[in-house]
Length: 268
Length: 326
Picture 1 (tube, helix red, strand yellow):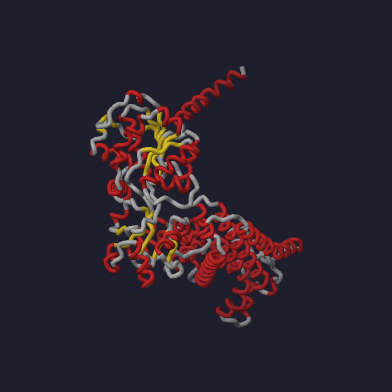
Picture 2 (cartoon, rainbow over the protein chains, first blue to last red):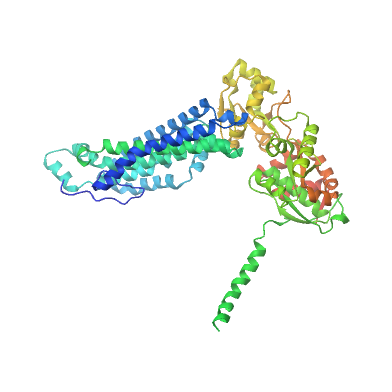
């Protein structure tokens, strides 16, 4: 590798941390990998101890019980997981297709559609999805959030392929690889760090927006937040909000781990 | 020289600020003119400045305008502060004397404002309890309770009601015991945990909460989802909502009298009520006419018919002969 990949701008299309990082930045990243789970643990334990040690009214007990908190947190995790699976299953193949010769012209159209998803208010999409399907439940809550979270992965997949040095592709072709082989053995592995960076952004976005999926009976931590807000019950509201923050940090940490260990070995 | 130029430059700015300060004063004037009808000019209220408030939903707005038109017809100088965002904001504004008079609900007063968890089943007794406690604790005056009771209720679509034969909450409890799948229920987040909501109702009617197929959805979706009767066969609603007749939903009878009474009544800031005892007397005939049927129809005209709350309020008052189109 004589040509280092230029570091992309730090924004929605965030470049992979593993690409051409100086030693100090690498150490900081390593430290963050250690500290972040500790913060998650402190936040979770802290807010639960704070809540359970209070004198809760009967109304609060209906929300703040071990069973209920475990249930809504689990629902939240399931929603997030489903969103991620949908996003990966749609955005990565789509991004791959849109960088193949002959399909490149279509890229602006699909990025535009994903842009609509990213900029449309999630609450509006969720309610629209209900009004169109006239059904409630898990998938009606998940689909709009997946649409909202599509852009970072799609954009980064396209970017990842675009950043592959053309000389490497030529070298592969020169060795007699077919275009599928070049894609599988050269282009895709080099694009993986970008895809993972996009996925991390999507994940955090999904955890946040999943607090709205309770609107259509998909459950999640949004139940605690909405209940607390409507009843002016700060305890329930805080438990829901802090747990959602902790979950977002945890998911972000898992994404960082994935970036560390799933990227191509030569770039680590 | 420099200073005069500076001042000259400042003059238009000051002028704009002066105009803006008038325009930006909170509250507005009464939106429609009215003249006296069976409500006639009251000399003691002539030119008295009164600020009328309301919460931020359809029914609250309509009730707020009823007060405004009545007081205007009686000769008072009314300032409009209806549509205050969030139920608790109106209460705070009233406690601080920023709003002189508004309609509120006895159950809300008893449970939310005075912090009780168990309501009183009798409407009049509930009103008296709130009236006495709020006067003693916060110097707020409750008066002229209306028959309308905007309490929680369970509804079913007409088809569900006919198929299952469920007409009362006791029937509903029996259906859950027999066939929980036929009684899937959609509830809002708040109703789901309130002691005067689902948990308390389940205890009173002996419903096994674990057996209920309960879905938590946004309050506004409950109406349509229950009307569709696909995933929600029953739903929790506010009893006087205009969407109940519009979507042909059937209210289940609370046959054991569990739900708290949310009768509308006037709430006035103590000093205002003491200075103007005529106001309660003036409003009494209006409150007396506000039954659930009347207010549900007025709500329907706004929520389904798309009319303005002020128009609906004035038209009703004119039709009742209380005021005339001024």
